[in-house]
Image (spheres, rainbow, N blue to C red):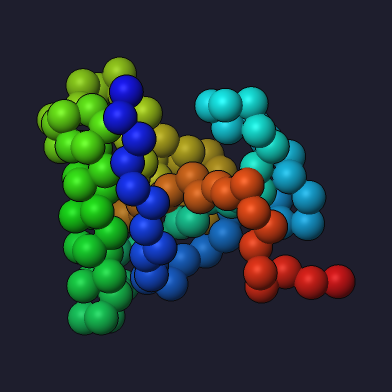
Length: 116
């Protein structure tokens, strides 16, 4: 499987859920520990700038999907774990639900905004 080029992207403002910033807690596909969180978005409340950021983010997801899987994210089968998920998938958890979208953000590098 081809490895896609990594890029930094700006996101619209989001609510943090399941934060793991002080120490890595979960493992990525290669078995390395990662820092991360769920980013919960409310697209209906986006400003014009946030709408542009959201569209740029979705466009980049398609670029990465094409590089690795040779298809756009909208063409993934329902069995695929998609990058942008519907908040109704976790409707029983506070902050998620109708009108929300969420993404699992993770990195091997400790987030720079976190300090003691």
